[in-house]
Image (cartoon, rainbow, N blue to C red; front, side):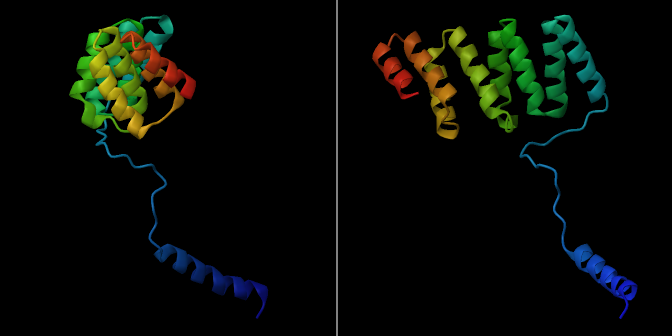
Length: 167
């Protein structure tokens, strides 16, 4: 059999074989329910432009609106980061506590900002409880350093020293 005839016979067989195999999506699937929002791209551009201009207050509000409309925790992380930089600690605490079930992909980052906000508002015991839960999931050096800082705030210098030496 000549080569072009062999190719004509093999190509349909290959297409049939690979066409019948169930395909899996290349997209990463998260547990949260992402809601598409019509003006999402415009709001992102406005938020980024406010950030570029140094207006972190308006930018954080837009990122919070984006999160509320889409439940995409990347927007919650950006909101938390900006709100922390302008010292809106109580707002961060309120928003994160109200939306814990929607935080999946950026759980460690949002939780750290939440813990730091608790520490800034002198809720050290609550911060310790949240950090203990975070350490069970993400046992990283930066989380251990955060634990040592909580011990320092509690004036428990021996435990802080032990944690710092462990890191």
